[in-house]
Structures are given as C-alpha cells and as structure tokens.
Length: 91
Image: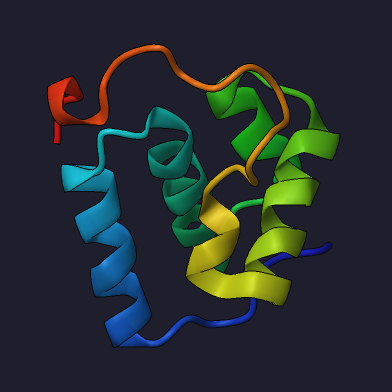
C-alpha cells in the first residue's frame, strides 16, 4: 500500500494551518489528504472521502513527496491575464 511516510510535527502543524486558514480549497484538500495518508489511510479511502479518482490522490501524494508545501498549490496555467486591477483583489 502506497502512503506518505511519517511527517514531522512541524509539517503537520503547517498542514493543519493550511487546512484552517488557506482560501485555496484545493490546497486545503491536498493538505488534509497528506495528513490522512501519513496516518495510514489508503489512497482508496482518501479518494472515497473526497469523491475523486485514485489517480488524483496518488498525484497529490507524489507532488508532496517531490515538492512538499509547494506541491499543494496548482502550477501556473497559461491563459488570458486577469482583468481586475491587482489593487482590487481580496488579500
């Protein structure tokens, strides 16, 4: 069974902070999945919990293993730049 190796107390605290404070729902979901995996939950259990594909969960775990916290966020995508003025965006 593939899972995340034990995470440090410091990593878990940071992940819990992301779950509690981040405005990015995808990062919150991934952070929670990392904690679930580190506590022994299977990819299938996490996929069932989030109603998503096992491949998605596996991808989240791989990104964590390779990039740690940077892997929780989506990489930039190409496309049209935002129209809204940066000063008007919520912080």
